[in-house]
Length: 252
Image (cartoon, rainbow, N blue to C red; front, top):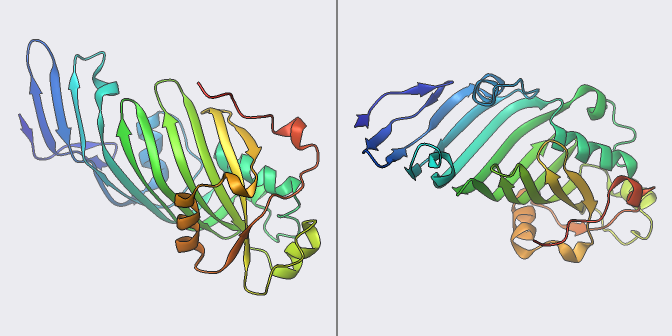
């Protein structure tokens, strides 16, 4: 059966559905053009999301299996972009902001993002869905307080995530040199990027500071394209880091 027009929570989902006595096959192309981010995500997830913006989303998703296994069989490329919004109480964003607050990289902000949220110009992500896991090939956030690039995986079946994030707080060079010990050689016009690993349960992941050498070349390339300025990857000193950010999980 060919579905030319369908709408789920504001997401256009044209495609095909083939059902037999043994299984079902799906092939559809989700599409969103300039819709309200919060209302769509809240409808799809069944819970409110404290993030605003205008959303574009598209992909190609296929799957085949019995009804109980169909969701895990879904696979295909996905891409999204949200523009001109504000992030309020997203758990991952809050943890990143809390980490930067411990390093004092948010001290002096006129509009404290921990209390009032954080404006952003754009949030772009590209990934691949396969077997209940979303591999994020590239995620870039252009926000008022920082720029962020990330890669990693989200496992929806086991409710687990493992992301490596590079955060570039938009501070002046003089401020960075004064507040990060050992960083006294940054030239004017150079930004600082801080690597963090976000790992664990989707609802409450852990934040783990990383050494500069733990960022892969692909993520470095994303940062170069995003910042469009020279940058230096550093590991800031965080007070009580071991208490707040335990060691990463052992590989499974």
